[in-house]
Length: 256
Ligand SMILES: NC(=O)c1ccc[n+]([C@@H]2O[C@H](COP(=O)([O-])OP(=O)(O)OC[C@H]3O[C@@H](n4cnc5c(N)ncnc54)[C@H](OP(=O)(O)O)[C@@H]3O)[C@@H](O)[C@H]2O)c1
Image (cartoon, rainbow, N blue to C red; front, side):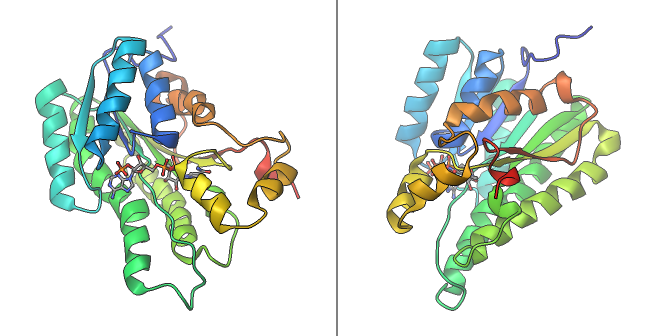
């Protein structure tokens, strides 16, 4: 039987892999032997994250400075990865932002920015890694959704739209690329303690108490809580699973 949970000899790109959930996932991949590409804008933050991964796991790590809103930069990033490693096996579309405003207050520029970072980028990055995955006989794409892929919120017009779209996009790619042996799945994180949600705690009064009350496990998730599920969806263990949206949420989605 093949080594079901190994990424040895494989190359995994994580957009937004220099912090928060992306870094938790990148470290998970490195722990099972994968070489890692950290694709984000803040070069200093990426260099720090890459150095820690190299030191802790002994794998190769490439940092690529990329704004995922820019098609040309995504194409350039894919080229750099292929020049460095010669292959791409796994892509995690994780880069994300939120701008919390009611529909009537949200500017079109703000709406576009959130959709471009959270949704359009997943389409572009997947599209440009596809030829490389096809060349090596298959691949794994993991799109990061959210509880807002399922539930609504008044100030989530842009963010919720992007995260609902991520699930539809996941299904479309899963169906389109099924016979290419590319499995495309989504992870829907619950409330995870990161820079993104530290800001939310300031912007949304009482958020901490609400999260603790509604999450059956009674705590915020940590970035490393996403690692196991991401490893599962990135390795041979999940070879016949495609198009699913898997909550990793301490039970939030089944609680009232
Ligand atoms: N935390 C949660 O509770 C939670 C729950 C559900 C879903 N999520 C989702 O999980 C993902 C990660 O969020 P997080 O909580 O880990 O947030 P975070 O700590 O703020 O990390 C966001 C990451 O995205 C990158 N990024 C943002 N804009 C980018 C751009 N234009 N181009 C390239 N990279 C960009 C950032 O790197 P640079 O700034 O260096 O570019 C950073 O690495 C997001 O998709 C988010 O929506 C989070």
